[in-house]
Length: 202
Image: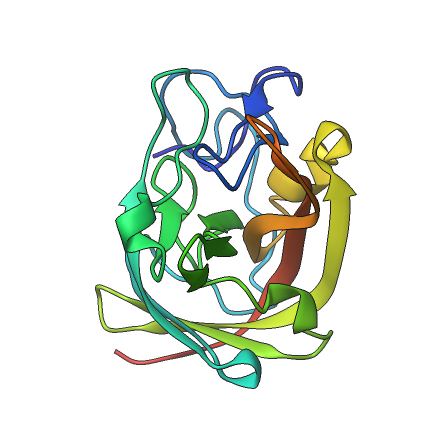
């Protein structure tokens, strides 16, 4: 599994379905580690080995939800959970796992026709809030929210969202802003930027 995004920043990250569409960063096929003469940054903070996430908890907004892997949609964009899994988060399984170097990406619906979904309250998060991700190896990666920001889907800062491999991070992405309907859905993306601050277990 690669730990570095590559490719042009022009490929679209489409949060497919009724509630999402967004701009993102492209990648080349396949993932690997730090290559050539590159070395990982020094471990001045906790760093974990790869392990898939299975649960996310955000106590300050009442989120406790299963996490499953999502890959690529048919158009080559990042897929999101199926609508019947609207109360689960989807971890992009071609990127870092939570606790590794680089930004682990999780996507989720804000709502459905039946009401609020898993990431409905993301805009209410504040800097300093804690996010805990339990992994299959029994360890938990604990992140601290740095910022919660809203971007027009056509102006998502791809390098900021996907390109920071200086430390382990987490990005939570959902939809927000004005509802436009049709293939656009909501006008904006809500992005939570968080950094790994602690680990526990297994």
